[in-house]
Image (cartoon, rainbow, N blue to C red):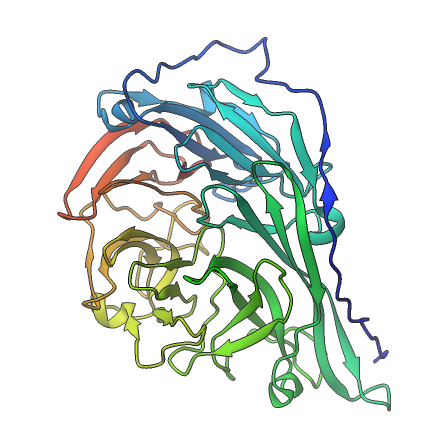
Length: 448
């Protein structure tokens, strides 16, 4: 096996964003203007278009915005695929919104515009005005970065990526030594758009873990600690078979769950912290996977067969005395956290699947999803009363809106109509909102 080395880079830069002319929706399209009225924010609904395979969401992303009152109205019907605006992205766009819903943030995922950050003013309906300030981060974080907002008043986004994973051998040129990739952490200004700074580094695991073939495959789910001086970033662990150099997905060997901690705002001094509670991944998938709560702890989900909620203390270490098993809380086996949101006062809502869940009709590899209300302090969970069916699929879900005590979520099976639901985090009540009209193979992936 050829010996390959990746040069360790420690880089910092501030890049000025370039600008382009402002544009909005296609003037030849239908006029679907909405009126905000007396409501306090827009609610943007996002849907993913299928490509060739139902449910894959790889055909791009459509959005449509309504008032809070209309989002709550079960007599209202929304068809994002017929009436919406297509945001720029070859595959599923990676979306975030401002806290008041007036601005939609997007990083295009893959394709000719992959890695391009842009902003849209939300005007209601399919009327989204693209703002002039944008920046492309693909030179630093590739054309397919993962990114999330920090909860800092819509000031900063954090993009992360692991690229160019290479196997290094011993001096004999054949004996496996370790695999590492180049990890990028980049901070992005959301108001004065531009790259604030970035760092790139190789991040080794423990020597004995690397010898077994483990390496960091993905980073995601960044969250700022209470002191505002550290970023905690979720880690996905991957593995090669040292004997063959091929991917090993058997899961017969497990190592502890990890998170990456870096200084903020410099993004320097990367260190790994370990959990003794879980062996899962902590990066999530397409939505937030860790939140800072009022008690000063960061709560983090894991992705594994039998998912946990973990917590990280103000010393930026795992509190290994705390463990909330979703299996135990719900009385199930093989739970897997797909997406979750912190609603405040210790309450969270989690999307998950589990062993024995129905197999979907649109793809025999996918299973039915569910939503539970979780009390992170009491370590309890309860299934939310919703219309469940096998084609309900939340693995690609991106966006929840927390508006006071109310949590807005899109619940639509793949290729079938559904609704917005409003979950009251204080009382636990569930209210059906606007109807979401679907099309074959498509699914709604978020509320923003």
